[in-house]
Length: 117
Length: 434
Image (cartoon, rainbow over all chains, first blue to last red; front, side):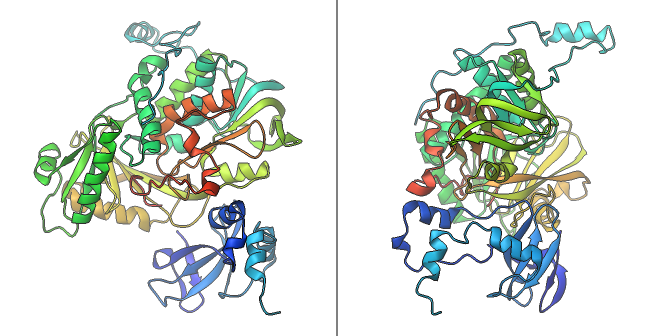
């Protein structure tokens, strides 16, 4: 049972929320340029850590808005909640973000290529 | 479909060596000494420094792998190591349903292989696994589901596996306590039954394999967590454990929910998500249900144990977790469905609920595979339905480990299917949505 502090509605039972899986996955811009292995990694190899996990949630039976959350999957402790489109600010969140294998993967490099600097 | 090959032609019937055989006579004999002189079913040895094969994970699948490696392939220098006690993970937490009514040929081959092994398992292991072919009835609650089910039944029958469609009247005759009122929110429109399906005693399966493997010289080492792998030039050479380094010619991992954690120790990733799956049992009552009933649409499955408890399975929680507990709304929703279908249950007390961490794969099919590390093998991804596959999984995995080559039943379940795109999508036949 999770008590999730929706940034707009306050603390609510997790039954009101929809889990959106791993956060910060960037879709490749030119998927055809990736090899089968690289695309399979992008598509199927989700983060599955026993520890801090960056994930997306939507308050489906409330304000229906999305947000990001850092939760320890070994204890269900919620460590940080932050807006979509932003990166985590806590030390644990930054560490989880950096430890994610997608940083530096071909799929992420592909997704970032051509972005205005 | 791929046939099951020789089913234990080299297997043992009962125990070979010095162990006491379990029988009605041994039961009577031990009654005279107040059951105080039963010999231990397995040893608790200290680990040796080196084994031919180390199996990580002493659940049903791991112990079955050890047993078949020893009995079918003549490998005797084997250790099975576990961070807890044997059978203490998902083997002791599932709802014990056994069936082989899957859609695709690849799944039919492995689950039916398993079913055939179940049918002789108690004799083979000289251990009563309480395997009961009471039938598994899956309900349909909409016209669409009925059509999909009819299609699946035809596919199953083409693979030589029994299955038949039933109408609501036939279901009511078979299960008098079910409410077939067409005005229910989710009425029973029909269903299909696999009569050879049923249940077994989950603990007994782990204990039976453990005892038989121990008899063949396998060391079962409990309370000894693996903390890392010895890998040299891409070849595994052993495992680091809480009780020191154990060298191994081959290492086979069967760790279910922790597959991803263990794979990370070896430096590669698996397409697996670990989530809690919950189940409940009620207070024991007189016999009222002699088949297993599953409903995918309202998400409920139920059977009655020999002790009289109603055993109910809930869904998997949506979020990743390793906590062995889930959110309360999941069993709550399942119980609402159960009470609508079986109003007789409405005042029954639930005694216990618990969660297990299931290793779900994107295509709801398992991974039985070599890995990027040579001589390191993984058997995982059984998700919400691994118990039924215990004998077959152990049998084909032992074959893969022994020969370093998958047989034709195991081959479709290799890791490379995620790269090649040959997924075996069994979301429809999996009992639990994921």
